[in-house]
Length: 456
Image (cartoon, rainbow, N blue to C red; front, side, top):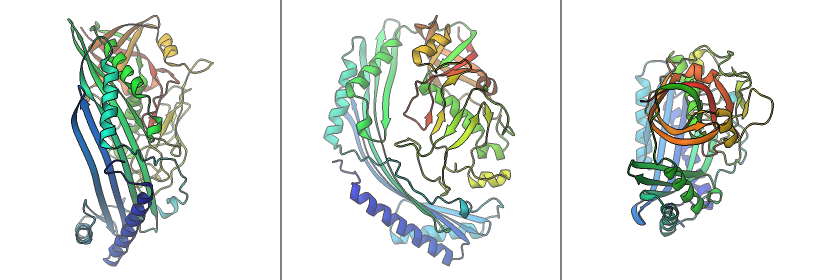
């Protein structure tokens, strides 16, 4: 058993202790004059082992505690936090939050989420799967993964393998009487390798991320995948500047959806810093395109019965037949916009991009998406921060493969892909059924009709 792991029985006791502490601090905040109060408390434990060239590079054990308190004196707000759960530290945190609130300007949009929106049902979403791995076993697993990748001919070096175990307990409580408890695990394996020839060196990697260690891909398969991806990049070329269709691999496609979500999120909207300002109810994607938020997926990376304010989550359409059905809002941004919370304080919960295309028939797998691409660019890596969600301008460094007649022809690197996000969203041709399950943004590969490729 890992030296820092939280056992099955201990987790429930720890949650009870955090809940009792949260409720006590809320009572004390009300006694100090606060009209409303909310508390977030957490305990995180983890093990992270890094192995390179068969040798241990780092072993890190973590066990962190966090406690955050927000009080409201009418429409005046004060927040304070601590990593120390001892009584004196908690009292000092409470005093500090109250002092801040008493001297802060009023904000009409401040306050807890509406009491009627608090979650009342807490289904088991199968998120708690402690991994009983100790340091020695984690090191051995990392060595096994790395060895699997390094045995491939052409692999010349390694950037190392990583084995991570993580467990998290959290409680959110507020003066509406709401107390929400969550416990979840996240574990990951990864490997980065280097291959080289006379033309230069290439690096690539692969990883897996799961709630339950029993869901990991085989260690040999992960090593093989990392090696295959690295070797496939050897001999990469630059392209001449051109316009062509572009296919985003699933792990890259989710960033495109993420940019859209950022543009329809409350903070960007009330600051009027979004290219999708005032677009609710308008067509922003093709008529066949649909996205649904599904917060209650079993073992989902973003599953949860309530958001960061205690508001109950539910299945909720975001894009319906290409139309933006709603924004992504917590209670503060909703009040600033004269709207209601969508249960998204703290972010999105399992956004599912439905596979499909404008033609009749089933969605394509990855090979089918390559055939649909025909001749164009497959993007497997993007670099840089060249995305402006105010204007929608998109320009990022990229690497991947040139595809001819539906078949990968050769690797490419040192290019830039550019367009405007508004045009990119409208020019989506197809979404594959090759969904990447390692994220809360669940999408397959995405094919765009055309982008500008800047190269030689």
